[in-house]
Image (cartoon, rainbow over all chains, first blue to last red; front, side, top):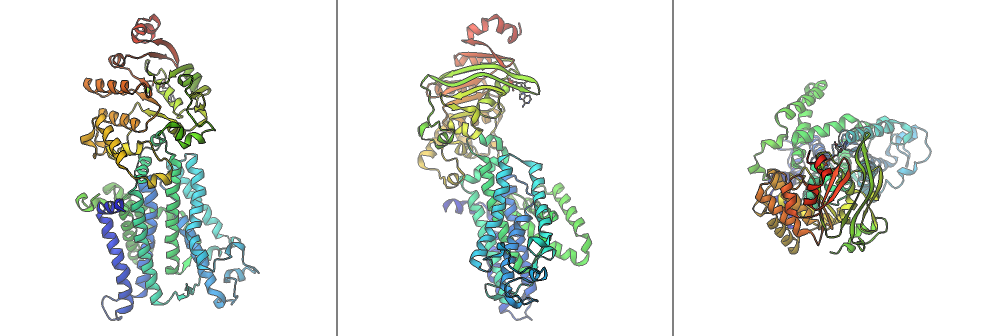
Length: 363
Length: 266
Ligand SMILES: Nc1ncnc2c1ncn2[C@@H]1O[C@H](COP(=O)(O)OP(=O)(O)OP(=O)(O)O)[C@@H](O)[C@H]1O
Ligand SMILES: [Mg+2]
């Protein structure tokens, strides 16, 4: 606890971020629900969900930063964990539809009826219960990360090779999820949700609540990560990042250090995906596309990797810019993003975080 | 903590205790290593006694560092045997297991963690928890703080304890790495060229430190600087083209005509 307090003391930008998140968690519901629509500070439910989405991306960026910035593992496939968390949530939401679907089947989601399936596949069992589905949001991405990480880290795959196989992993998952036979709705994915935990997803109150939950989750995960890196394990991570082979000669099993943080990171990414789906109303295999994973890397690089708060800021800034930009020049976004990336690498190698003087950030 | 209590040792192939009852801590027998056909270590045998301080000298490329690589698990020999005590087969252990079994190493090129402070480098090296969960929960107790403070004093880096290791000079990095080695409390220390980048005075201090370690620890020092080797006043092994060329005290070695011809270039 003391270690955490002093860690936060020396991470003033983190404290600023946490304060903003907590204020937003309180203010956004007020602005959306209590203020009349005519009020200049009123927030429509569209904006609420849009900002909720940005914060989900912030959480996703945080999850990447703890492996890339803190451990030097450049994952080019972190979208896979986000997507899996999203799919678990999507399956839960799908099962909440009940007989309100187009085909009115009380059990089977519409796409299964359409495929002439007569029973629910086994891996959909139990997902109508929140107490089963919600833990799986963390567990499924965590399990994939565990299996992947065990193989990759133990055989000492590092650097570019590791990045390439993470990319291959998300690509493979994307191809699998595109197939109807896999049982996750094929290329349409899962959509047409009605409610979550009994609350109507289209209601302003639910959207405001989802936003607040997202903001609080981001704040909570931030504190968790900051606390983690303020322990001796944090020192060990820095050492592994900078001189992994040297660390082994001190008697540490570096593969296990990397594996533990990688699994935690995947679980956080899964949580981000799960919070994202009810706010955007759909999850489809596009989330697994390699390009998405590369975008996450760009957010973190732009914000300033290794600072944690920078990753969150990077994700929000880039996505606000993306929304604005795609509004008037949809095809131009990728060029814009590429240009931004080149410019930061050239002029802000440590990202936006560089713009904050050390005196202010405290780090 | 006694060596016998260290858990990873028990995991290492059912050989729980370092057994030096025969007085030998390290057995290397008929080792061979080749890199792309080039024989870096050639039928090398070497025995280090418990508590001994031993110097290894030899021209560049003689295989001194490669020898340490084998003992610490970095390089696997093509053939031969390497035992730590009577019972621990080093060739079956990985780097981490060898380190926890009690072999510590200082690298030729000093390698410290530049983004950590001097004190943090020592904290990480300190003998203690090595599993992720235990490391996460590890806190510095009073005793451990004292130990770090003592070591800082011993390596003369107390005023720099809160500085990042990246700011240290070459010689200071050497000291820090020696300090890390001490924190590990190894049974056997392999010290590769510790005096490089040090002033004469620092060299003398290093020599004193290494000598003071012998007895409780076994110390193997690789060094080029003859004055430094002389100051250690210990048995010397000469390596040449991957094999032992001669063994004995420095004076008799320096008189050996074979050694003079290959090593001293006469
Ligand atoms: N990983 C490697 N791949 C190829 N050749 C190697 C490798 N490691 C060492 N060698 C070669 O093996 C020989 C012995 O090298 P080693 O580093 O053990 O010498 P050394 O006695 O420590 O020399 P120095 O005094 O210069 O440190 C050298 O010729 C070196 O080039
Ligand atoms: Mg060498």
